Amino acid sequence: MTSAFYVLALSVFALALGLFFSVTPTNLSRIAILLLFIAGCGMVAMGIFPGDVHALHPPATITGVVHWTSAGVSFMCIMIAAFLLSVSFKSDKRFQRFCFILALAMVGALLLYGILALVGWIGIGQRVYLAVCLLWLVFLVGWVWATVSLVRSG
Image (cartoon, rainbow, N blue to C red; front, side, top):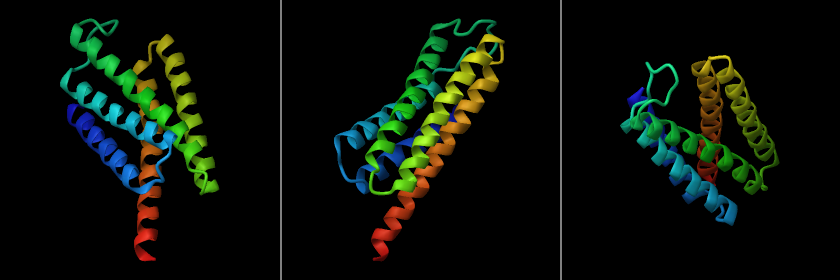
């Protein structure tokens, strides 16, 4: 899982850099890019500090607290960045709507995570939330790629 955190952090950094060079700079887009950078830093911290997988009630150690705090900050930053970017992409209505729907799906996945945590299925809730966040990241990367390709071709 450690290498997955590093790869995810690298992809979030690359996305933030791609957005920095490809979107029209507005206050919302700048804040969203900063939040993505913070999320990437949090994912690096998640890789450095392992979670308490065998504890009955994590986090049980200081490294576990750092891991869980980094996870919370990272994924909250991604969720807020999703909403900010959906508002800042006013030029492409289809993308704006879909980006907003995925941001709402992140909120729904976060609520599902909370419900599953209450019944002891934290791992399933984490994976569902992570899958929705990754779907948003992949979609956004595709949009940036298509936008940059369009600009270069003509």
